[in-house]
Image 1 (cartoon, rainbow, N blue to C red):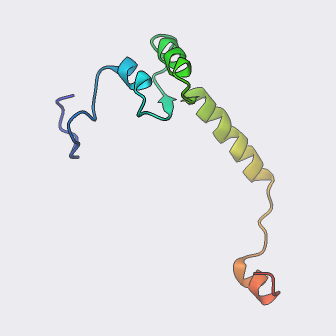
Image 2 (image 1 turned 180 degrees about the vertical axis):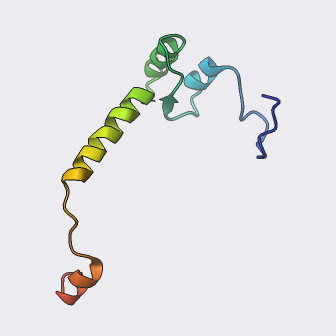
Length: 89
């Protein structure tokens, strides 16, 4: 927490209390990238009890893989100039 980060942060932005973050009513979304089972499970469970959406690193990886798969199957369409020339802007 005392390491130089090359950025100015206002007081209270950094914390060691992850449980306070997932319980904070001002936090709208929790992104968990801790890895391992604990304390990730406890933090996710607490966030869900506080009705917060939670994204985990595994979810992110699955979504990225699905997007890459979709992208590989999509053929590029006409560019905006071609659509304009066809009167389909």
